Length: 252
Ligand code: MG
Ligand code: MG
Image (cartoon, rainbow, N blue to C red; front, side, top):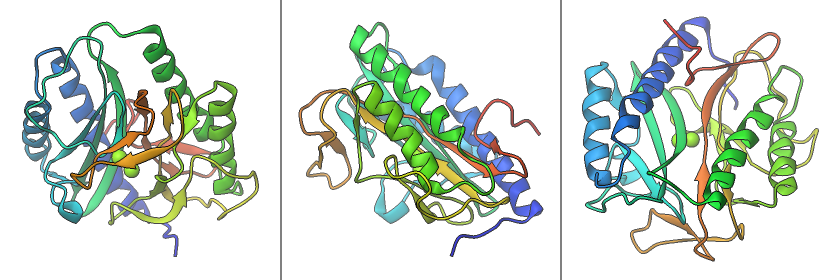
């Protein structure tokens, strides 16, 4: 069942989304060579708690940290550790916040110092693919319209689309129906309705779309070791389109 959120629920999700957005902004100046991902995790934890929210990922299915930090060939679900960021790395940071029982979920990929042109290209076009997907969000469209827009954009830019991991409904559970794949056919899948809340999150690779999971049972990496990027927003379907709940236009 895909839930339709009430105005009250959407108001809580706006607040949760805003906390996620502000946590990204808070972390940004710290994303520099020399900082460990564990230090970033601690900063995020403290900030989210200071906003009267709870980190959604902490202990989620046993995940041991508040944020996911995925460096270079790591696609998603990287566990914060004592690894130090280096000049030339890219890092995907995925943040979730639970405010009064409702979640916001947003990932962004960042440059650490100066990165190669290839990594710049990957970041630019993965972010753009998210917005291509967003353009399809309106009542009456299908989930497949979002999926197809992302896949088409990625293919046109010769980027590998990760298929094993997908976007999702979000609300009083972090992951709800429906799945929002980053590939698929136009006109397929559930129909979007006003009041649905979904997280759209392309994960694109510079090389192969193939991935595997490390022995820590969390970290997903590309099979060819080439870099991967991840951009995600939580949105609500509105009467004539959508509103991003984890972006800078969502002020109280
Ligand atoms: Mg996320
Ligand atoms: Mg998500």
